[in-house]
Length: 92
Image (cartoon, rainbow, N blue to C red; front, side, top):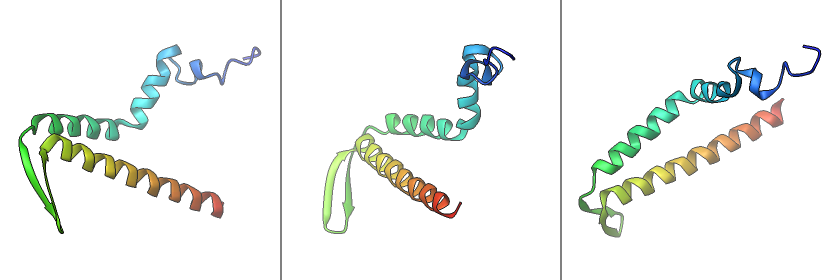
């Protein structure tokens, strides 16, 4: 391609503008499925419950507790992934 469009984002997926979405789905299909399942699980659990941890006792809706736990897991995964990327960059 003499005009320099061979490596453009629109042609990288091979299907024009929709290629980026297909590439994203191919790369992140498992996390997307897990997020959808987590959202369905959270929405279906709307009862009020009491959670005891060490000396804390919290009474709240299940969906709120599950959302907080999911966010804590997301943050922990992000931190661990960031540290792993830093270690890889330092090695190579």
